[in-house]
Amino acid sequence: MGTEERLREKVSDIIDDLKIVIGYTKSNIPLRVNPLFIEKKEEIDNLIFNNLCINNLATYSYFLSKEIDGKIGMILKPCDVKAVVQLLAEDLIDRDKIKIISVECNGVIDIKKVQKKINGLKIASAEIRDNIIKIGTGEKDFEFNIEEVYAEKCYVCSIYDKPPIFDEFIENDKKFNIKQKKEYEDLLEFEKLSLEEIDSFWEEEFSRCIRCYACRNICPLEICRDRCITQLEQPHWQSQKISSSEGKFFQLIRVMHLAGRCVECGECKRACPSNIPILKLMKKMNKEIKRIFGYVPGLSIESKPPLLTFKNIEKNIKEEELI
Image (cartoon, rainbow, N blue to C red; front, side, top):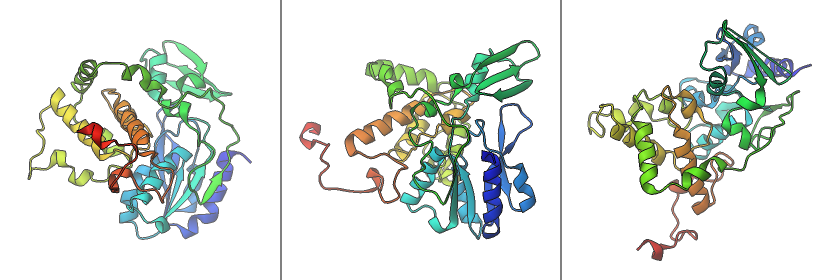
């Protein structure tokens, strides 16, 4: 019995105790999947799990747990479980309302990397077999190894087979085998830049921000979207003007609100239609939070984010150096 068959069997066994189960299903668009909301046993056969399941379904956990009277089953990759852990650590969702069915992950594809490999041509057909991706565009056929187009988070993932918490765990027939990179290796060159160069870099990037709020809306930790200060009229914190300065202001608000909370799922970067490397900003903040407070979000329900706690003395903050 394969991974998907065992997953369907498990969901079939437990669905009577659940109000709804959230998972993945096929899409009509090549190399894409859609969220699947299962309420009846007959819908379980539509459930899939493969290298295309990049969406972080934990994004639905907060809002559905508030709207649905009953227990919610969530099919999550181990890295996505981190978002649920963080919400639990902040007492934003009730553990008794969430049943976590975690599936061992063998990497997910970054569609933007794929589009770059095929020179931006429209994908007419796609097939993944034995770690080889074959793509037809109508103009030219392409073939490359799946390892070339994994999402960046996959190259530094250490929990693909061991989620922080779970109620049910499904092993994957296809094991994850990839040359790992060092954590925050992608920040090394960026950190060599001067403050002026960094400011210039973000000035250019944020000049492309159209303030669509896709990064905010897809983030599993940004639960205040219905009362976001960037859209409040009273008080009026931010102009709706599209400009580099307003884009920078919006993203800096996000960074501060996610400091010590972001689980680096990469959904913000994936959703951005302007291809702004928003995740780089989040990862830099996380790196500093880890250096100063020794805290990594999404790994423990008991550990509280450092910016939600208070200590008279922080051993890694030398107050005399701040004066």
